Image (cartoon, rainbow, N blue to C red):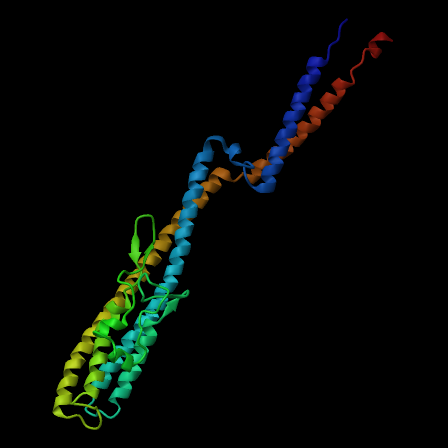
Length: 304
């Protein structure tokens, strides 16, 4: 009688190795929570996962950038409110018929405007256009404003182009108006008031005469125009805030969807993995016993 166990032993060994591999894979899934250790383990889903990850990184990048832009727009809103208050205070000051303290009020409003136009965010001047590293004004006093040549426009050193920001894959938004666009008219009022105060019909000191009152009425109209320009810019800034908030929500929804999509492709079913591990461990034990039994087969019992 011929007894051969080579084929049976080889088969048992293959079963043992397969069971060990299945147990290892199930244990790795339970440990990592993922179906595979790398993209190679996802076969045809690997390209989809890579594309989804790239799209998610892009969406998250826009979320972070738009949140920073939201903070900047909030800073700009405060600056616009300060400019609007300054213009309102100047208009109120000009309604008086007593000129004794008028120029003090004018200087106070001017200082407030200079401060607002010098507003920074993250180290950059928000009213300087694309030239963010230098202040938009080179005059900090009424005297320096009067000395500007050839006219008041010379005190503005902002760039002509506005700063822009890309808020999504298709949309580029102008971040803010420049100082000259926002306050050019108001600065011209300050300059004319200072010139009039030092001219032949000045100074404003004591009760105003008819000439002074007529002039002040003209400048009140100009201040109202400047006030409207500032408020239009402030409303535009508010509209941009709402648009950015909507953009953030859209990107967040996209990122959340992609997160779920990637999880559906990558994440292991933990209950299923635990069941497979138990089954694989049992198979390993059975295969190991079978292989051990076949390895110890001998002819001695039959030869006795």
